Image (cartoon, rainbow, N blue to C red; front, top):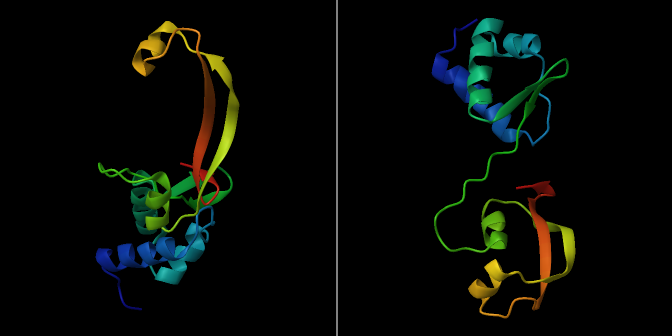
Length: 133
C-alpha cells in the first residue's frame, strides 16, 4: 500500500466533501480511514480541520455531516436573488410577520412622514435551497 502525503489526504477528503450535499453523513472514521489507507488519528486530524473551517459538523452519537457553506456577502450592490443564483442556490423567502403598524417618532423623521402614519411591516427570513441564510 502506498503512503499518501498530507496533501493527498486533504485532497481526497476535499473531493468527498465537495461532491456531497448539505446534511449528508460521511462514512464512519474507521471505514473512511480504511478506504484512504491512513490511520484513524491522521484522518481525525484532517476532519477536525474541516470542522474548524465550517465545512463539516460532528453530531454526538450520530456521525460527521457535511455543512452548507456559510454565505459571505461581497461588498457590492447585488440583489439577494442574484447572489443566491450566482452561488447555485434557489432563492426564497419565508414571511414571519406581516401587518400594519403606526410609525413612531424615531422612524417618522427618517421616513419624512408624520408620527402615527400607517405603514406595512414585513419580517421575512431569506433562504437558499430552502435553508435560512
